[in-house]
Length: 259
Ligand SMILES: NC(=O)c1ccc[n+]([C@@H]2O[C@H](COP(=O)([O-])OP(=O)(O)OC[C@H]3O[C@@H](n4cnc5c(N)ncnc54)[C@H](OP(=O)(O)O)[C@@H]3O)[C@@H](O)[C@H]2O)c1
Image 1 (cartoon, rainbow, N blue to C red):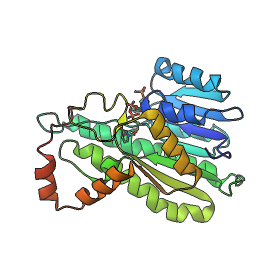
Image 2 (cartoon, helix red, strand yellow):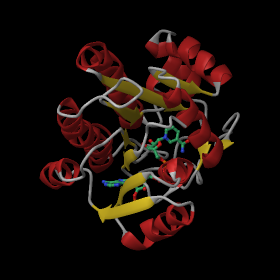
Image 3 (cartoon, rainbow, N blue to C red):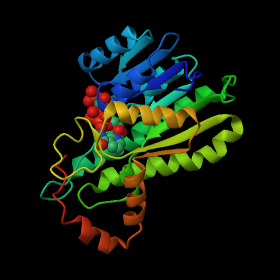
Image 4 (cartoon, protein in one colour):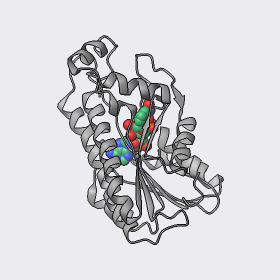
């Protein structure tokens, strides 16, 4: 953990990877701003983070609500690290991707990330640099699915590819004004999102391990934090196949449950 991440904001902190990252960041002297859509679900994470000595400020906000997100982020005070983590998955099931599912995935995973990252960048641009030399860090949670657009979850893969590329490209300009951007690309993580997947999930890891790897990557300033490395390289290779061949190959796997 970077000792200069003293003011941390995480969306989607009520469950899975977001909850694990909140626990990983929690320590005396750290202020955590945590969001989810349900205070009961968020409550357990808040208690765990407070038990580790952090000061915690929980809020219930839907990341799709741009105005409320901007008010929250602009009112949070200094922010050393903002993690745009809230996301939803949706598959096609045995049929096709529903219109509702496609819109919900893009609204949450792309627009929700922008609703978090853009105000965070505005706040950080006005802050003095911390002792690590940066005004702040914005990390977007993408996925290894960013590198392989399989036919069983088209919107999900496309949404993750969009935010991964956006964050990495934008780091090239933001770092000139003292702000870092990072993409986080986990493989399969054991969370409610993957609980019903009917297909094998190689190198499935616990959320705690994913959170540790994420924080270790952020601590050393890595631009793209992708793990496990073997699945990452496999995803890059398979994702480079011609799209028709890729669809035929991935089409034989059991489909992701319908969203
Ligand atoms: N699990 C994996 O294998 C895996 C792999 C790569 C990347 N990821 C990514 O990791 C992130 C976390 O996923 P997870 O696996 O931890 O899933 P999860 O356990 O389902 O957690 C999703 C979190 O996002 C929040 N959320 C969803 N929609 C929201 C909205 N509209 N507004 C505010 N919060 C919202 C949920 O809050 P509520 O409590 O309100 O529902 C929950 O806290 C996602 O971006 C996901 O795509 C996951």
